[in-house]
Image 1 (cartoon, one colour):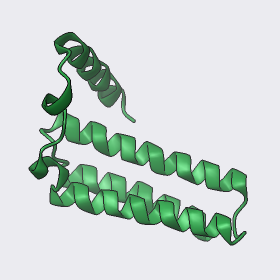
Image 2 (image 1 turned 90 degrees about the vertical axis):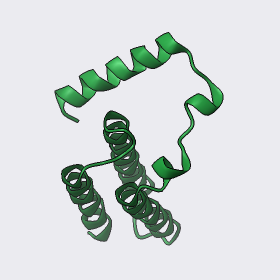
Image 3 (image 1 turned 60 degrees about the vertical axis):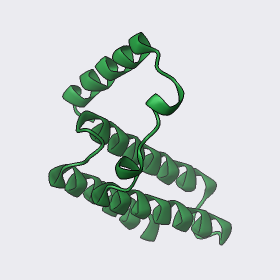
Image 4 (image 1 turned 180 degrees about the vertical axis):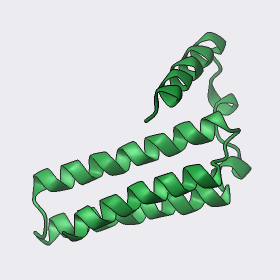
Length: 112
């Protein structure tokens, strides 16, 4: 995560705490939840998570490697949410490409 994203995340956290809005105000709208780039990225993350569970269950990877891969998936999902929060619940093509590259890395690590 870049320094800019870290700073923006902190600023967003402060702003959210200051406004103290709860419930529907902080919930994602239907449009935000179904933005095509976000859907694609999140679907891939769900598939990777399921593949990690399956590989662990079948004994193809160790519990330690599964934990590491799940942590990487979690970090990618967190980055996707941060990117979306910074751009009115959208992610740009460049952000999508960066997230896809990270997902490809998880995929390659799982296949080793």
